[in-house]
Image 1 (tube, one colour):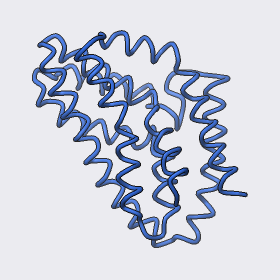
Image 2 (tube, rainbow, N blue to C red):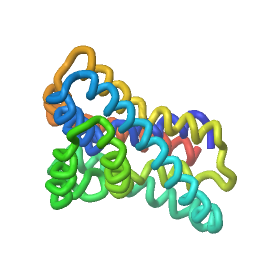
Image 3 (tube, one colour):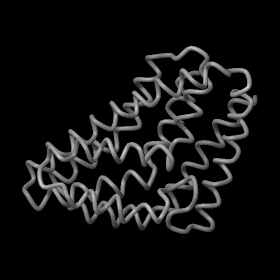
Image 4 (cartoon, rainbow, N blue to C red):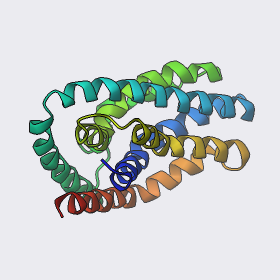
Length: 212
């Protein structure tokens, strides 16, 4: 594992349209109770997701490292599959596409839970639940990052988590200081295909880098 692969995989994880939509919905609810709630709730949400993602990562790495030689080969296959899925999402986008976004049938339940955010502290249980949904809809890059290391590099692990979470903090401060969550959602919907294209290009760059 190196810095190039770490940052690229984390960037793919970070720009997942699934997580952007979820946070925008949460901040939209909190904004009705004041901008201070947006700031507190957004930060709590971001930190909780980081902690949960870190815990999942440590457990996953323990499992993957037990079968490192086998897993390493399978991860190249997974990487190729992810590249195909991301480029397919760009050319033939449909909401809730398998493996690259949250399945459509789950969305009503998630947004119903978000609608219960009557205080910024509700961001914590929401983030815990949401992190469970983030794994199936954006776990590919994370599994690659963890599985390509026989012994986890904790510096790269921290860098990965910070890059992954950077959009959460950025969106929180943007909504607190300047824009409405609806504009974040509009931007996401307008550029969702381009986000998948960028993800596909980054993953392709990683594949080429690993093979040469």
